[in-house]
Image (cartoon, rainbow, N blue to C red):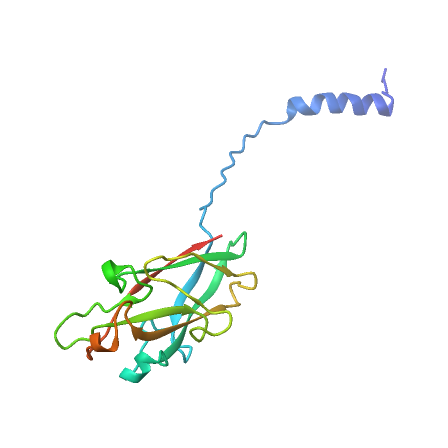
Length: 196
């Protein structure tokens, strides 16, 4: 004699049997990454927009030094920015070759060259802004470096941000025209940039 199970009973029997027939699989999961800091590619550019870490002042004459009339624009360019949570950078300029004035306490960057044929009594001023002492410009003081906050809200991997700067050759702190000696001049500073 044949017994037919009602459809619901047959389904219940199959469901109860299926787990016992199924194999057990184990899968291992590995998650790997490299945590990288927020960053931008940052370069110095001369007034023509060419990447150049040297600000070439050209010839500077004594009246231009006394009148503070010889300056040269340059810029710090932020490009290829990624991972900036706050979309900003903090920039600090410090001297590599010393500050002018008594005991190096002045606002200008001193001449690193000190031979008999090198300039004396002069210094370089660095300004945030395309022109020294223009509206909105601020001197980046050598002996008391201050952090400058740069807004990078518009920066991306395809959009660059240009921070205008300028350099000017002036009499060194505490010097007069009688202290001035003509000759070669070179000074170095270091931009330290922290991204947020």
